[in-house]
Image (cartoon, rainbow, N blue to C red; front, side):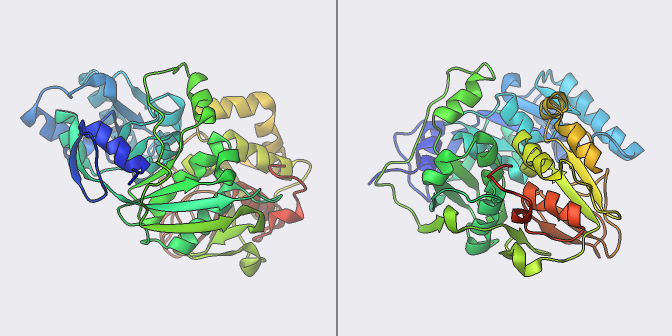
Length: 425
């Protein structure tokens, strides 16, 4: 019987000849990532000195301040300062702040590579699976053990195979694919499993689009979301100066899966996740006309260059509806600069968008655009839980950047196909 990507990657990391779903392995970690919200300030700083003076490998530890940047209060500023000082005190050169959400930075800066194990103190670390890495979120206490030893134990997950076939129609994006998948599998349907995405639709997607899908694997409870690394992944890494030192690991043709799901991209229309669960998914037509007060395009799920490009094409020559706030936060400083140089940000601003710094702040309700009681937001982010973006009495709908842009124009949830003629336009 063949092996899945998860079985192969974790066997490599454990230094064993083979592994099967259910095995518990003591694995070597290739990259350990901490953010400001769940990193050094949570137990790690105090406990490290009790156990060991230094981290096990400074080159393999990445610390990113992204949730509290730019700080909106003295407390947030103190947390960022503490994180910065901790990284400096432990000689962590891979420290980044004010440059964007950690998962995008991990990918952009070459910290995520095919065939490796990447663990981080944020649940959406699974985004790295789009590059063929076993990437997953861990708690702060587990991260403490990793920092000291460079190892942790993992149970090899069973794998759910999700196949997408066909060409995406105009007005439909990878975000719609992700939401559709979650709606079928359910918010706990993939608990401690790997979701492996395959099919000609996946192969046709850009790395940007693939990242949007694996980012949300955790919304099904998944331990990891994986895609087979291919020439596009190699090209993405090469553009960042990484031309080797990794292995392109893929599942065997006769690998065993605990479940399979098949979808047709050419039959998919725009969908939204309705309050207050990510798996509460419906066709956009079912909630069309719902008034919105805020529209948000950004975060590690919906703020990449292709997302901004799609939104700008819809908004060009149009205006955001009076009474609606359209907030745009590019997913990284690099994307911000590229979008500025190409004129995308100017197009969005001309339509009435407020351009924000690259940050997690809006998505997780920490700063830069919180919701008041009774307000409704349509967002390109990854979660719509109660109180996620501000008031517990607000409502969040999740959609693609195209759906968000179209809704900002009309002031109500809108099918983007009313504005779109071609895919990505």
